[in-house]
Image 1 (cartoon, rainbow, N blue to C red):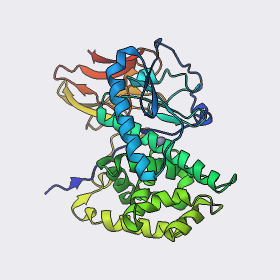
Image 2: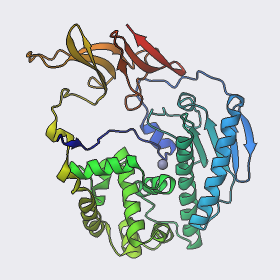
Image 3: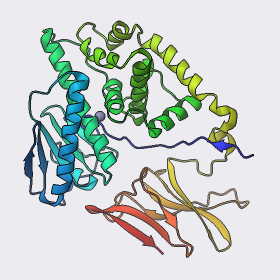
Image 4: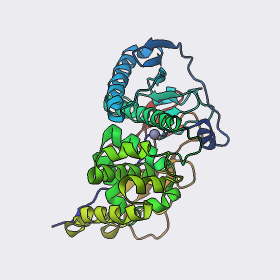
Length: 383
Ligand SMILES: [Zn+2]
């Protein structure tokens, strides 16, 4: 029987809470933010939100407003807290509209699914075409709004001006855990991290600061705390924030474990859970042969042409993403990889969405792919 492979994938950052400075830091040198569209902004007022939208997306904005109110009610009871100011919620109907936002000056990378901007307290996010995804991002960002507001209330109540603050792994982890709970994507990432040995302990979390893995590890940590010590402990971590100078000590006070002690238990628990999978399955890198070595290579599409087998794929091996083809098998040791389409240099092929969508080759040998082109996505059939 052939061994099953454990699924592995690299996924882009779903959503980050950013301040102006962090977005500035992500600015891509040499690129300008282009304003393709002029938005005729309207405001829809709900009980707790001022929802900003433009007329073409009214129906979607109504859905977003309803999801936001639903999330507000859920979080209000979960955190035993209300946000006393009205929350500006700025919605876009697509990611490419969202990337043109002037609520922050820096470029918005493709992987950012939405953000909560602390300075003006605005929540800014697009729909990506999936209501499930829209609901997730709205809930994720509103967890930021609530946890931040709750922390400020706690500090004010205890007249504290110096405090450790909530670390990013915690704010993002809780935003994920209190929006999607635990899902197959989180499970896949953590499973892979523990089985391939690249899980980063909480004590070293700064090594993966801001990465997608940090988000998922934060989510896994929140889940472990909730399952082991009770869900109320997550809220208590925020309520106890004023009592200790470091977050590790706040954890010690709340669940009886500091970072180091936590790691020991948490990582042991993950090993118990996932190691048995290796009995009947194999890690891909142990039973397969890598056919590409440089950069991140995604979206393979195998096809036959001229009696020979080929593979087309997207890779960022030269810094920019290109679509490449290379023959499979054969005796040549020379790298026969060829560029078919150059990406990220022209507005026509601005982005192949490296970690989303797919490419394919039909039986006539035509390459089919999507690319961001100007202010929208275009489906290309390349002969
Ligand atoms: Zn976030």
